[in-house]
Length: 167
Image 1: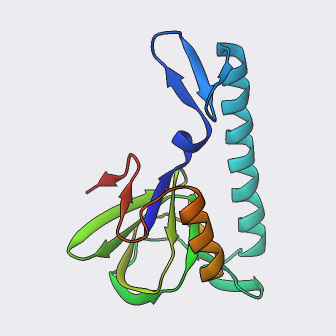
Image 2: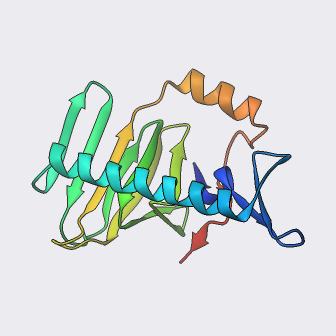
C-alpha cells in the first residue's frame, strides 16, 4: 500500500529561489505556480461536482466495470474488508485505513495506491450532508501496478510514507 501526496507529485516550493519546481528541473515562477495551483483547485471542484451528479445519494455505484464510486454524508464506523489492487482518489473529505496496527489518513491531496490484496480496516472520519465523502476507486491490473513500482523505483512491499499524516 502506498499513499501519495498529490502536492509533492505536481509542485514543490523551492525555498532558496522563491520559485516552485515541477517534475525535476522545470522551474515555475510565482505567477505560474499560482495559476497551476488554481487549475488544480478548479479540477478538484469539477471532480466533486461530477461525482455528486453521478451519485446524488449516499451509497456506492459502479458506472463502468472496475470503477467504483462512493458517497457518505456522515462518518462511518470502522469496517473490515479486503482491498484489491486499486487507487483510491478521494474528491472530498477524509478516510483512515488501519493496517498492521498503524492508522493512515488520506484525503483529496493524498491518494492510496494498493498493489496487492490486503486485509484492512477503514473508517470515513470526515463527512457531512453539506460536504459528503466522495471517492472514486478504479481497480488496477496487478501486472501494471508491478511495472509502475519497478519504473518508479518504489519499494515492492510495505507502506511508503510520502508526507503521509499518521494519526
